[in-house]
Image 1 (cartoon, rainbow, N blue to C red):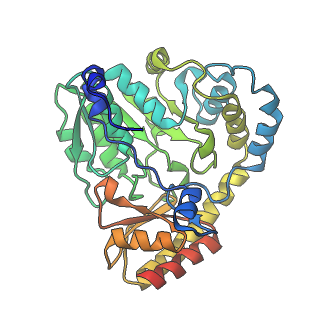
Image 2 (image 1 turned 90 degrees about the vertical axis):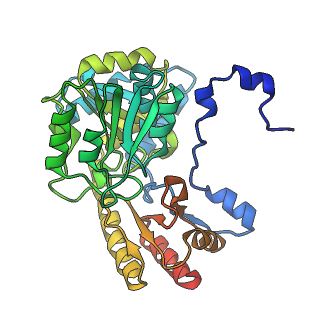
Length: 370
């Protein structure tokens, strides 16, 4: 059957939707094994926690699966209470999303209209661009500086049409973090400008640098900041799709106006509460990540590859050969990494830090094909 959009539909579909590029995910293991006729592939492309979910989270899923025929409480009050206690805020400051990217879309729904501007780094998570275009906004993309967001240039790009400004910390896909003083300058520069600053902290739990700024440190001091986090990364719940945002109550009330009913499922809510309370699993995940990064850096540097210093659970590097061809050759070896062409960095590969044996398997395959 034809996949072409018929002419009558093109005339009825929002031109903004037609202009949105499709999201390009990392290839799943089953697809690679099926296409290439191989087995034993490992996926190091999507920055998932190689340890998986905590045992407490899995037990919570089993306990609650018998109630899967019942709608969950729509706003997730128990999880919001747990998050509020974690951050020392009121539950009215917390909103849940089907992944933190759903909250990005809800924020754009609230603030962005035709030709309104949204500022974000040029080489970054594609959802910033997608949610902007979805509502007819204009993407103002600022080039990276030292592989991270250039906060000074982003501040200078603000106009009366600017509605949202996205900053990722650590930045995806490079893993760099922002400077505290520059972030505070950005907060000052956006104060009273009618601009909402969205701090995307999906990988914040992996950060080891002690002076890295965190959204919660500034929430009380400002009314134009929201920070987003996720249970998809260090908590190992990517398959359940759950994230959250923390901001002043006035903003959360607005977001809830466009939040779909029951947007976060029952099992996701239950497992997230359990995962949040299993900090031993978080600690072990950090240890595995830290050890794996050391191993990968040593080997990538020894091979002459230019690896970017990362505070996340992945490393982006520039090989000495063609990155696209290297990506394809690694696939044949059963190693799924991410070619960063879709991020606008065609000379770079990103590899998720895996378990020790996965990291070793990746390096051995890299030596064979590069």
